[in-house]
Image (cartoon, rainbow over all chains, first blue to last red; front, top):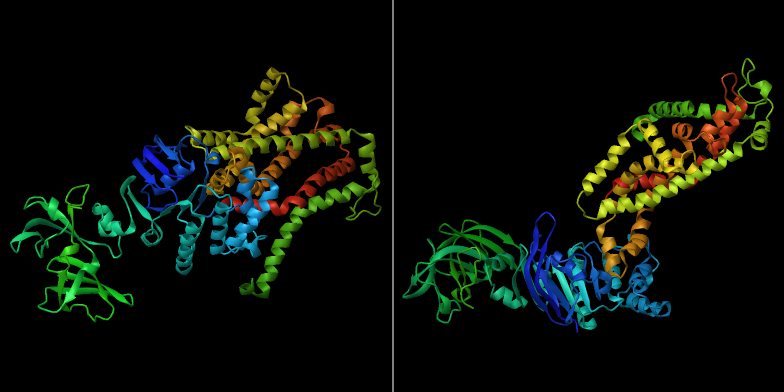
Length: 362
Length: 278
C-alpha cells in the first residue's frame, strides 16, 4: 500500500521565502495525481519533499502509514524522473538503468533480467550501449523513465518530464505514460504547469498557488466547479471570462448585473442556495464556450478573431465589457462586425469578491 | 581564414611562427648546449648545432652528483602536493558549490583573498609556523607550504567546475539509493574529472618549478628539490657549470613534457568546460 499523506507540511527556505504552506494532501494508492500550478507555486518543492531532497520545516509526510519525514532519499521507496532527465553522462543507457539496482543491493545475477525487461518495455534494447549525449530528447526521456521503473518503486515522482519534448512527441509520451501507469499499477505524482497534461492524464489534480493547495479534485470537477477565482482563471484555455458586478434582481428573479450585462440565474442554479443579499459585489465567471453567437438584434462587436481551424477564439466588446468566446470554425465573422451574444446562464460561476475569491454555492 | 586571402595568410603565419621561434629558441639552445662538449661551449663564432654530440654531461650528472636525489625529492614533492591539493580541493569545492551554510560566501571570498597575498609575505610566518610545529627543514613542511598556496586557486577552479555540474545529477543519485558520499564518487567526481586533471597539473607544475620557498624553508642538502639543489650544486660566485646546468634543465623539463603530452587533451577540455553551464 502506498497511500501518501502530507500532514500540515510547511516549507520555508533559508531567507524566509515560504514555498509550501500548511499542505494537507492525501494521495490514494495507485492513483495518478498531478500537481498543477504556475511557476513558483510550490509544486516541485512538494515533490522534492516526498523524495527526501528537501526537508519540511514542519509537518509530517507518511507513506502507507509509515512516517518517512526524516528518512534520507535512499531509504524511501520512491523513484523520480527529473525535468532535465539527470542521466549520468559517463554511463551508458544500460549503466544508467543499472545504477539504482546496484545502489539498492540487487544481486548482480538478478540485475541482468530486470534491466533487459526494462529496456524491452521502453524499446531501448538497441540503444543500450549508447551514452546519453548520443540519444535524442525522447530517447533520453525514456531512459530516465527506465531508471525509475527498473526497481519497481512504490511511488513514481515525475517533475515536468515532458516539458523538454516537442509538441508531437509530448502527445505521444502522454499516452505512453498513462498506459505505463495502468500497467505498473503504481502511484504516480506528476508535477506540471501544463494544464492539458494534468487534465488528460490524471485521476485527480491538486492545484497550487503561492504554496497553498487551492483545490484537489477530478479534472472534470476542477473544470466545471472551480473552488475559487484562482482555479477558475488558471484552468481552461482561453481563460474564463471574469467579470466584476453585483447580485441584483433580474426579470423578477435573482441575477448577476454589470454596467453592460444582466444575467438572470435560472431555477436550480448551483449558486442560488448560498446567494448573498442583493447589492453584494461578486465576480462572475463565464467559460468561453458558454458565450454564443445567436441570431437577433446585435449587442456586441467583434474585436479580434484567432482562427485555430476547427474553431475560432473570438474577442468581443459588449458595451465596455471585453469577452472571449469559443466559436465554431464554420461561423464566419469579421472584425468590427456587430453580433448578438447570449450567455448560457446555467453554467455561470459566481465567486466572492475578496482575496480568497471562494466559489458561491456548490 | 579564406576571407583573408593568400597574402594575409602568409603574414599571419609569419607572425605566428616568429612568436613560436621566440619562445622555442631558448629551449633549443638549452638542449644543444647540453649536448656540446666542454671545449665547444664558448667557441667564437658559436656553433648552432653541436659538431660532436656527447652525453657526458648527462652521465656525469646522474653518476657523480646528487642530482638523482634532488630529482627524487622533486617527484615526491610534486606528487604529494598534487595529491593533497586534489583531495582537499575537490571536497572543499563541492562543499562551497553545493551546501548551504552560513558564511559560505564569506569563506569563498576569504579563500580568494589569501590567494591575492604575494607569496613573499607569507614566507616568514610560514617558516615560524613550521619551526613551532617542529617540522621545519623537512620535505613535508615544503609540501604543506605548497599546498597552502596552491589550494586557493585549486578551490576556485574546481568550485566553478562543481557549480556547472547540474544539481539534478546528484539528486538523481540520492533518489536512486546512493548515500551522499556515494553520489559524490559515482556521479560528481567523474563529471569533474577534466577540472581535477587540470587542477592537478597546475599544482604539479607549481610544486615542480617553485624556487623561493624551497630556498628559504629547506637548507638540508639531502631534502633539496631540483630547483634549489641544482642551482646550489652548479653555480657559485666564481663559476657556473653551463653544460651540466643545461643538462639538468633538460632533465627537469622532461617530466613536465611527459605529463603535458598525456594530459593535454583533458587540460584544454577542462579549461573550456569550466566556463560552460551544462
